Image (cartoon, rainbow, N blue to C red; front, side):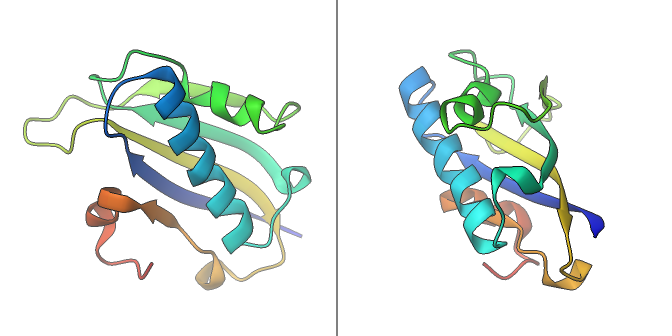
Length: 120
């Protein structure tokens, strides 16, 4: 079994804890489903949030989904002029037999514009 990395992002409409929980939960669920994964396949997840998000920790959404025994960490994204606002990004490390080229990175909604090079 190989260690692989999966990327993803979602743009929030507003900075509210319930909305963050819903949107980050949808992102994590899509990453798991599109890659045929379960929580047991997760090694760790890094979350970043743009500096305009203050309502909650994105990792709290993972815990509410039942991802409770996986190391999670949150960090602030760089504050770059002109960058897309209200974005949560993830970098999940997984165990998978899939070749690297078959890993499905997930960019939901407006965040798809961040990676136009990846077919969604």
